[in-house]
Image 1: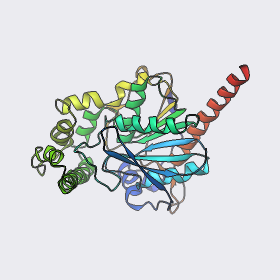
Image 2: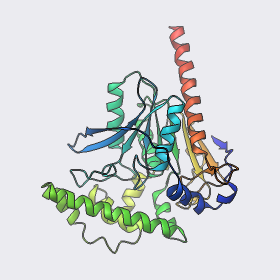
Image 3: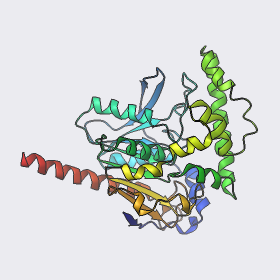
Image 4: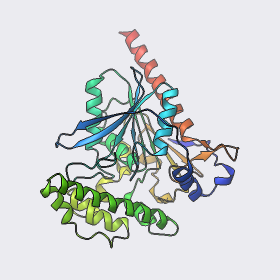
Length: 342
């Protein structure tokens, strides 16, 4: 279902690029006391997760975007607000994003859902009766939607939210080759190349020569200037895709939306500089469980509103908790009614 959005950008941040850049560079996120845990993955590597909140409150899994982490401002801000609404949170740091390099050449990418599934299974085994939901941003949103579609009714999440999702990866990669969007591309590629360089050095230092050689065989990455090139020479090569076209086709999440069976909200800005209108799905591509909220402004993971020049309002921190609370209360009412019938 298409939802009419109430979002209105802050008057001096109406430009899509200002909406995108301001929170990334100038936001002062609250200081949280989180607890880190390391989980050993089935392939004998690890993922680091960051907890916030204690007790038996409902739990929200948070997924960050490309080159992000549990330290990203939009993650910290949402953790802070969600606890005020009665939700604990746990952040999945994708491999190599926690500040610690991993033990294998394997990285993370837009279609890599195995670590999310492993985390979900681990949490569900530990707390079989605790309500769980998930929120993903950008790349993390694509991973989340793809995983939900793959599950097709197997997951017991009570809700999901995905924000600023690159629903069609090829279109988004091309968008980043044009205009001011090349600014974001340059910064992201620089960070990704550094990520690969640090990973190779780490693998060599810990004696994982076979894994280090997998990265060495990628060759000199300094001339890579686009995501089409990076995803072809690095992501596809390291993760068993035939080429970049195979990676984009199999990993784009729009094709999975029809298979999602739990209450899911997708929030997309029409002016997102990381994508075009062409990535947006038609209503016939959405399952009955999926709501699509398209805003007229907001940029990429921005969505800053308010009326006070010096007090920007991070609208996502209002909209996401409201959706989660509504879905949780609806599920709780339904469960209570079913229990009463029994």
